[in-house]
Image (cartoon, rainbow, N blue to C red):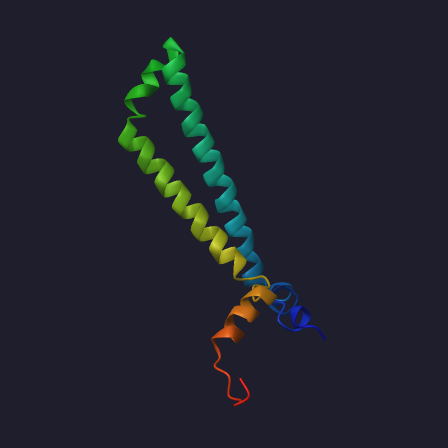
Amino acid sequence: PPRSVVLDRKSQFLDIVPDAQDVVRNCERIMKSTRLLSTFVLLAKVLTVSWAKARSLDKFLKPSMLAGLLGISSLASWLAKKLKREHYFKYTEELRRKDMAKIPSVWLDK
């Protein structure tokens, strides 16, 4: 069988283990919720700048608070994406070629 079938983590692990399925599902939820939070925060900031009635939100959306929320949200999303990727096939042919290039040649004809 091809390497992609033999090394496929999804069919050999993720499809079988319920805990792994829960981890992937939670990662997807985290990625969705962080995107929603970031969008909401940015929309609120745009509203406070452009709409006079929304100025009351301005005291909560100071630049440091905005940067902190967006930074934490980006970090959480990145970590969730990285963890989710670990449950799928990841050793591609390109990675294999790079690894094989690191192995020194043993034969004298080179």
